[in-house]
Length: 215
Image (cartoon, rainbow, N blue to C red; front, top):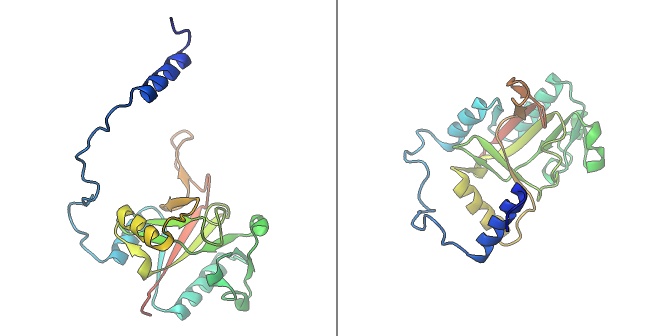
């Protein structure tokens, strides 16, 4: 029977592939082998800071909690940010005493000038932040407000994507988050006339505050 449309040809190929299963190609690929052949020249926090900054992320190191709070307040005042979406329990009561209005309900996120969230891990080699829907901010906290502030600990630093997923396996077992995403710098696109635009479909600025776990 002659195929009348390209769509029918594609569907026929799909049906044939389902009926006549093929062997998996490249069976001998070592999935546990290191992707990077050379070890990182510096510690994980330095590597992350360098890679994160290359993607226009703003990195702030904090030696202890007091330094973290002071740095956060300094940033909020510098940017004239008065309202924050901060649904994570970690921030409960941390900023209100400094005159910052914190919203914890996702229905209020549209009125917020910025969001502040935690994360799962930091991937040093990529300079990326891994977030998931398991946190109080859900899916919206990392993408809706124009400014995204992330607070993480040095204990959350991992080398690469392989170690990141090992971390998640240990943390969640079989009950994985419904959404896992990597953030590498602020939102950007060059789809329109090849011009790079920041904040096109997400935050225009992203700040990472790294808290020393031993501080």
